[in-house]
Image 1 (cartoon, helix red, strand yellow):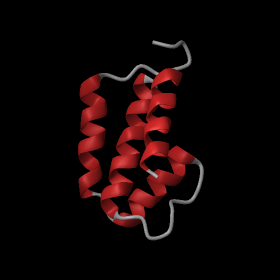
Image 2 (cartoon, helix red, strand yellow; image 1 turned 90 degrees about the horizontal axis):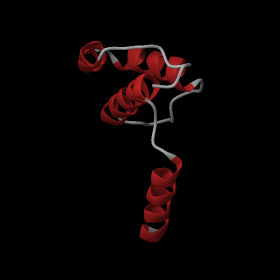
Image 3 (spheres, rainbow, N blue to C red; image 1 turned 60 degrees about the vertical axis):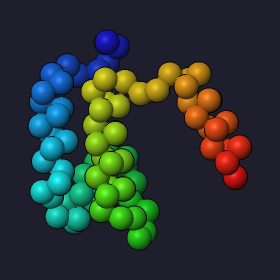
Image 4 (tube, helix red, strand yellow; image 1 turned 30 degrees about the vertical axis):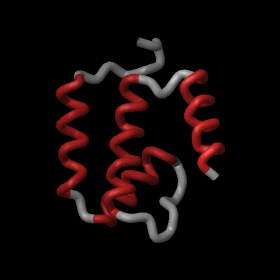
Amino acid sequence: MPANKTFHSRSSIAKEIATLDALPVKELKNRWRQLYGSEPPRGVSRELLTRAIAYRIQEQAFGGLNPATRKTAGASCDRRR
């Protein structure tokens, strides 16, 4: 685990993510601002807010995708356009 990452147990992360479903949209938007440092996109659905927040929580706790995977995912998206 990288030195700059705060240690989180998998169960504490799972519990944090599980609580997202009970939060009102206003709180989800506040959580987005905390995690992403920007306003959430206009018209974004509750489901997408929840999924993006859950991803970011996991990304910060356990690390994100490696550069090769990001490149592959980006190329796959480009081909679908």
